[in-house]
Image (cartoon, rainbow, N blue to C red; front, top):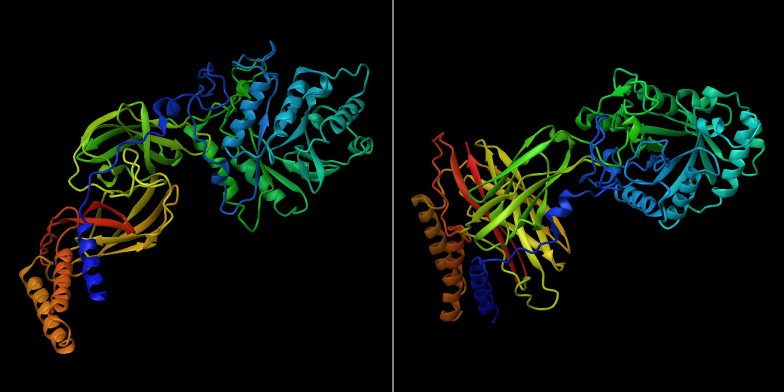
Length: 615
């Protein structure tokens, strides 16, 4: 019985290598979703001459991904709540609109931001009204916090008639203590509320000990710049954008971090910014720090990463600013990266070319569509790769439309190519699955795809190349391991997977395929190898007869038949039916081979092909 089962298993394995046309496109997004405004900036907001980008489609990649590995740094956005009145620029929304506050907080959360620091101008005004809206909204999002930064303008325009600056500040902090400190969403450190000030000591003489003594709750005070660390009552310091510097503020930031690093009992609040330009501000003085097509933003993170690590953490980071449109430092509408990309299809390979600095790109996403509007993603592609093998998916031959999106690094604008229409013609498509969107099969049946990225690899003789092999659940969930293997390899190539089995679940998972060039005398298809294979089979037959001579003849024939089938599988290319090309070890002419990459599990057979060129 076991011999019969062995025969059946081998024959089933051979039969399952035949590829069947796959499933149809299952859209999960739209072109409009990928191109319209996905920020809390007003839809009507247009690009400005000071460098602010118009409302558009930006990256929602988590901002923490720009920080060093293992960072537990909290990231806060500096928020202005003065828009909607006649004394500030019209940006298309009012800061006292609860819907706008909701949009801003949820947009921040979608970018991985942990909270806001509010530029506050005292009680009983529209900014204070908006601050209370922020408090109420933050309380509906556990883990999202807010804090008050008292601006020197709060003292300058305080309604406390006849009050000295210090008394005005005491009155304001008592108001903050009563109104905001009790909120469960108010930012704390070591169990104490955090409060900072902006420009107060530059304009007024304040006895901070007396100010603190007037409060029932003892907050942690944060002051500005290097001197903030040694300020009276200081619990730490925060840095800011310095538009008058000639090096985009990098030397200032280095000095600030170097000052804070040894002060382990105090908070060090770093700064990241896209640039600065106050030429549109009514109070502006033509201070300009260029954005460098997104590089200024990235450099501020690089500055942090060069000094901090998982063993030496930066306390927190303030993004300067979320929405100071007038001084050209806002990131609410996104950060431009001066990048575009052009897509095309060559054969069955979707390819794209980038015009601009690819260092601003987090990853690419290729999409396929039947109508150009409803799109299905084909998976993420890392920078440095510019192609996707369309035959690595489960689509039947036909006419399709594709797009490629360059997803920016956090808060940087996303870019998308124009539409590319093409006729797909794959001779070996996959997978064969228990179900599909058009033919669901049993309840919960998955719809899987297997693809490689890139779709070809070139190496020198004796060298190697790597490809990513991705198995994705396009619908449903598949929670069993899928074993990966290569076939159709000539004698001078070997392959290995890391890992050798993957489980996509309800998403996708990737293994790294390494194809290595090894010395070879002849290929599987050569005369010498055929003789070797025949010798092996003959030797096995003679040995088998000697060892298992008492086995029934029918069973013995089954064993021999099994070996013959196995030899056939070894000497052909799965799904394509092509024998491996001959190898001439003495020739220096580049040789190309089509290698089949397959994935198998119970009732599931997946495959695709890659082209391997050896120079």
